[in-house]
Image (cartoon, rainbow, N blue to C red; front, side, top):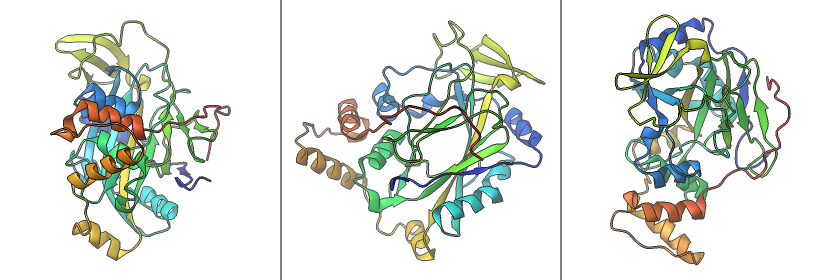
Length: 328
C-alpha cells in the first residue's frame, strides 16, 4: 500500500430503506452542471487536466455543509456507518461530519478523466473561501502537508446499471487500479479520496448531439413520477427515466488525531494565510528553475493557474484494470 493514501473500506448496505434516497433526490431538484464550480477554462483544466471545458450531463446538488442545507440531509450527514468506517480508516474516534452532496450523471460513455483526487482542506484555506483548483494543487504539490486537514470521504451509489462503476488507485497512481462495478446499488466506499486517485467509469451509450450546446444554466428537472428532463430555458434537450441516472452521494468528514488537534483547527491556530500559500509556491517554482510571473491577483490569473497546474498536477500513469468485480 502506498504511503500516499489509505486502503478504502466498502460497505454492503448504506440505507435500510433506500427508497428514502429517491424521495430526497426528487424533492430537491433541479440540479445544475458540476462545471459551475469553475470560473474559467484554466481553473477547469487545473482540476481535470483536460482541454476546453465541456458542459456534460453531470449534475450536482449540495445538501449539507457543517449543517443541513436541504430538508432530509441528516439521513447522510449523521450516517453512523460512514462515521464508523471513517474512524476505522484513520484510526481515531474523532470524526466530524461536514459535507453531503449528490451527483447525477447520464450518458457519459467515456472515462471521466485520467483520474483525480478530491478537494482537500488546509488550516486557513478551504473551499468556503478559496477556489477548488487552488486547493487541489496545494494537495498534489505536497508543499502543505503540515497544514492539511484529514478528510474521510464516503461515496454511496443508488444506481442499478451494470456500467458507471468506480475505478480507484489504492496503491498509488503509478500502480494498477481496482474496479468497483456491477451490483453497486446501496453500497459505499469510504476512503482517503483527497489522496487516493479515482474516477467514474463510463455511463450509458453515446447519444449524438446531446453534449453540444449545453450551458452552465442547463438543468436536470424532475417532472413527476419516473420522468426527468434535461432542459435549457423552456427547451427540453432530453427525456429520461429515473433508472437511467447514475446517482451517487458523497459524504465528507474531518478526522482528528485527538481533541487538541480538533481544537486547534476550530480556533484557527497555526492557520496559513493565502499570501503565504503563494509565496511557498513561488519559492518552489524558483528552486526548480520554472519560469513564472507574480500577478497582481494570483487567485484569478489564468497564466499563473496554468503554470501551477503544469508544475504540480498529477494523474495516474497506469490504467490496466482488472475485470470488474465486487470489492466487498
